[in-house]
Length: 100
Image 1 (cartoon, rainbow, N blue to C red):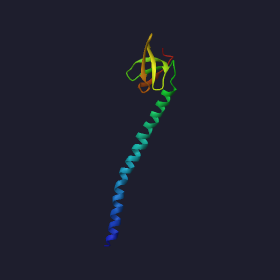
Image 2 (cartoon, rainbow, N blue to C red):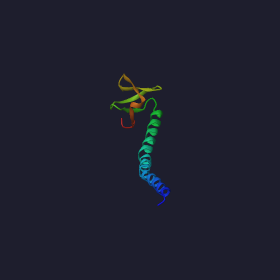
Image 3 (tube, rainbow, N blue to C red):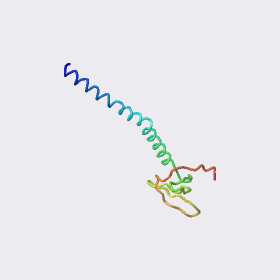
Image 4 (tube, rainbow, N blue to C red):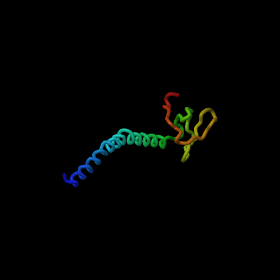
């Protein structure tokens, strides 16, 4: 048999062996990575939309009301005349103001 044909068949076979790996990477991107990036963008937009008077929950489970919004942090009031400064990234959720 011709050696050139054997080399061409071997090259095609090695390329086809990488096809399942490429397919797995594409599936991971569309089912895991891309949706997570979308959720992170939504959370960031919600954090940027927070304003004074909004009720929030921090990553440590502290409930409070935003008093001041700064560039990188919030000043929240967690009790009467008790205010703390927290990083914007530590706000995980907003609380519905109609609950309280």
